[in-house]
Length: 172
Image (cartoon, rainbow, N blue to C red; front, side):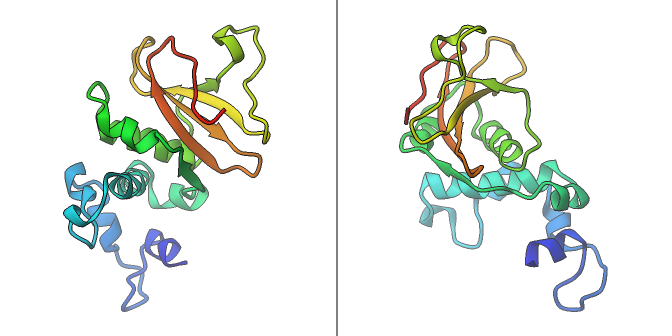
């Protein structure tokens, strides 16, 4: 409710339709979105990544779009945050932006992760019914891919970042 009111531009104190602080800060330099209310040194990398995903969602969508595409439920697989932190070929901000767009349904180019990696192979499905997907993290066709599961109820589980030809995904 609070986010909806802020997205609609209502100031919390006055209730008037003024430009909100969220809108004014929505596209500040990304490094400033790494540190929320608590100092950055008090947050571990996984917590900072959650903050960044929310910040990228706010920056990437207009207030009207955020009402239509709210940030959906997502979780990180066991290895995901460490994998993101350890990568040097993809900026953390780019990973956060793609995660945000996936979690709100404004999906960048994504496709099913298939068993064996061939187009004619079936979609990879986990024993709990979750389906595996992958999407580009860079605009190049052979760049790294974000692999994730979409659970039966719609939650996204971000699993790994892999090179173009690696079709493995943790949690399967």
